[in-house]
Image (tube, rainbow, N blue to C red; front, top):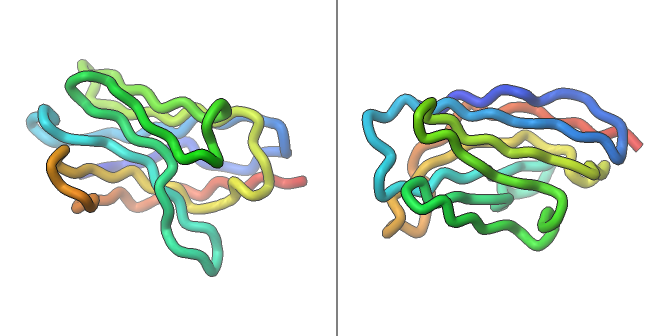
Length: 117
């Protein structure tokens, strides 16, 4: 089970930090990711982290502005979002998949992020 928190309303240029609590017994060999869905658009990849090694990847649209991290002890994943833009407005979802899988198979309920201009 994944539970997100930390969304809200922020002005352009501001920052937000999203959190995702994972209740799995073990996350070894899993990838934790953040994806987002803007109104009327498909859900797209934002960032991901290999749980064991901490290796990260980002969508080009957020590179240099967003940072994904994890706390292995607390089983938490974070998305620090800086220099936010109105186009970052979306519902943000935390998701998990086996590192060998192409698609994410478990999702949180999502948290709304709104960036005003």
